[in-house]
Figure 1 (cartoon, rainbow, N blue to C red):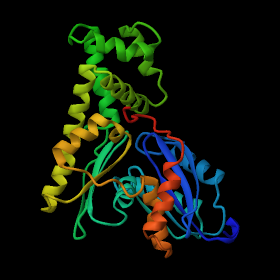
Figure 2 (figure 1 turned 120 degrees about the horizontal axis):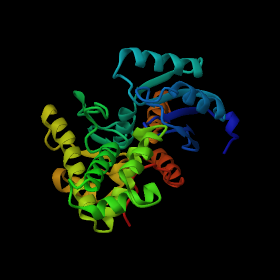
Figure 3 (figure 1 turned 180 degrees about the horizontal axis):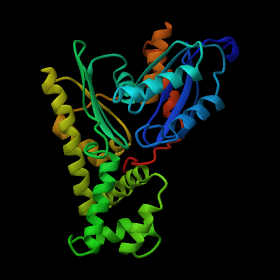
Length: 327
């Protein structure tokens, strides 16, 4: 293999609400990275520009950069914010042809390697992205204020709601409140303690979303309230895919998935029952951004190239801030 500095590279970036990942790939499918940073959602991360600037500045391309694709949270949802995302991306990658897109579109590209389908993404937030080769649409993604149903944030918020109700006698499952909150508060849960924890969080949305992992672990141990929360989350997520299929008039359009919530066996098995067998993602969301950039650069993105990229990304340490698959 030639020296990295003599090869042509493309950049892929997968931005999210809790975590951002950056990597480079060449025409041979060799991956450099990923490199990680906090989330860059402009709707609830005032420092998103500084975080993105620091990430790209700290990890320059290993050789000549031919193309870049950036999957950005919130992109396309506000003309003003999208213009700022475009401007900053161009400023940080001067002279490099680049594509900016919603992070869910990048995940869709990775899951189907450019083919048709419905991608259900459920991480900190939730959204479905569908493209049947004729039309495209998105379902969900309205944010935590009145949307993001079934997401890690929704799961954590629902868990906190039921646990707090158990603390003051409105919910019968006191065992759930104890199991969820005692590790969180480092002691027996109380109303003042829970409120102090919440208002001490620098980024409450991410902190609440992180509780989805605890809910998943409790469900795996047989805790009934936790299990019921995950079943409700799966039902809400299934509605995203069903709505996309219905609007496109393609009831059998294949579906795939991305995001930490789908690492829950309970959620994924329930979705499979409701929607049919999913198509295993061809590439992770970061791989989708790399695939898009590579295709635009004229790299051969055939099955062998995808396999090399997929293998490189899958063998990296797992760093999801929310759900992990149950053993």
